[in-house]
Image (cartoon, rainbow, N blue to C red; front, side, top):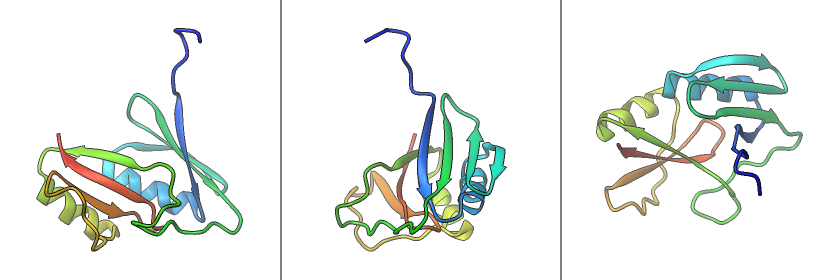
Length: 118
């Protein structure tokens, strides 16, 4: 494998890419750089995060198997960030395996993501 290979984007399946990108834009401060109804992209870090419309999208159910990837968000103040993310529309599942080191939340479409002090 070439040493010039790098990950340029993470793409997340979605029922509504524009709305989901808006949530993550508010959560991260990243900018929406394309907002097509079928494919929306955020920029602000080493890789882009995109959301693509999938017909018949099915919400992952935490903590059941079936979701294949999740985002980890590093924050300065874990408790404040969790409160802010919930105010933006995130959910907080009952199952919390982090032992206080991180918190599992779900975005408005049900994708789990983790928030940790960093």
